Amino acid sequence: MARSTAQRVATTLRERIEGGSLPPGTQLSEEALGRELGVSRNTLREAFRLLVHESLVVHLLNRGVFVRVLEPADVTDIYRVREALETAGVRAVATAPAARREALAEAVAQAERAAEAGNWLEVGSADLRFHRALAALAGSERIDAAMDRLLAELRLAFHEMPSPRHFHEPFVARNRALAQLLADGEHTRAEAELTTYLEDARRLILDTMREADR
Amino acid sequence: MARSTAQRVATTLRERIEGGSLPPGTQLSEEALGRELGVSRNTLREAFRLLVHESLVVHLLNRGVFVRVLEPADVTDIYRVREALETAGVRAVATAPAARREALAEAVAQAERAAEAGNWLEVGSADLRFHRALAALAGSERIDAAMDRLLAELRLAFHEMPSPRHFHEPFVARNRALAQLLADGEHTRAEAELTTYLEDARRLILDTMREADR
DNA sequence: CTATTGAGGATTGTTGAACAATATCTTAGC
DNA sequence: GCTAAGATATTGTTCAACAATCCTCAATAG
Image (cartoon, chains in turn blue, green, yellow, cyan):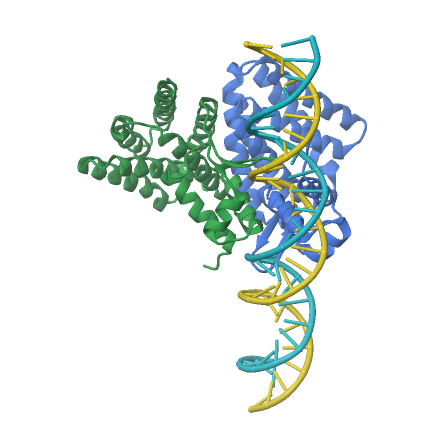
């Protein structure tokens, strides 16, 4: 559990960004943040580098670091990568260990329980876990890490979603259907469903973003 | 082209690593390197962060940074990601702009010219360009960046290849065949060829690595 | 002889202050 | 209103010091 000061500071900032108290576009001032968190500027800069690596912030030379602002083009790009990685998972389902396949069903069940309880934010988290588990079928550490980064970026966009229910509800049943297709060995149909799923989700996000820009 | 000192330092270290003068496993001492390159420890540490992001070095807490040592498991992992990303490119070939499709033929031609000239290192570079162009058909900045990182990692393994000709020669013709299948719209066969191509290349590297461990 | 422990030395982790380089804001002049 | 020059604030980089951690190696116990 040994972690450096910079890593702890990065965790604090990550929570603030994902929690919304540091909204996209905010500049992270070295002097102010360092004083508030009780760390030196050098250490803070090391923490910034970690967050840059996670794409949660961007670093502009001589201007500083800013909480990432997700453009529509970014959302489109992210969904292209998701399609590539999750499709790779679908294709590897036959050779994946049983534990990884069970993780899919587990995430679906969690999403359904959260939906019944009306906890739509948790539904969203379970949805991301499901798709992370999907990509994890490929059995690659690098794919897992890439998915983690992608989904962290996407969470920035989720913050702009005015109604979590409207956004997450339709996908609960579709996740179950997709999991069922995979369990039944219907690989081709599973791939097709995944593609339309991602296409629909992407469009929903983009429409909402355009809506918000008025 | 404004670049910070840290970025320039990272570039020289990158060149030394890829050039072989800093072989895998070497520790990058903050004190010694900082004195030699005429930069402070803090700036050097910022440069290290950039290289960590590129996976060229690893950072162990309280122990320092070391030039990445590629294990057989890493090679297997990298080829899983390559399969996912390059397959995504193959699938998007129909919708890709003409310029991107021409980049494929260009890389094939360069590899063939280099092979005729007996310049096998250049053949290797052209091979990587071809596969980078393949993934670029997907039209995603993040996929492009991921491929760049993956191929930079792979170069670490290429250093251990005793005979560049033996390793690169067989793949020149296969790249041309693959490009032809794509130009002909034979998507299914192209995907199949890509899979066996990557499988063969991976096995060749792994066999060589095991050979070298004796 | 092997394994463990502990002291010492070397390296990294972090700090705070200082100055340089750059960007942004303000103001003067047209 | 617009441009240009200067003032101000922020980041980029350095330096020196100290704290925390790891590694080496010898001394010791079994």
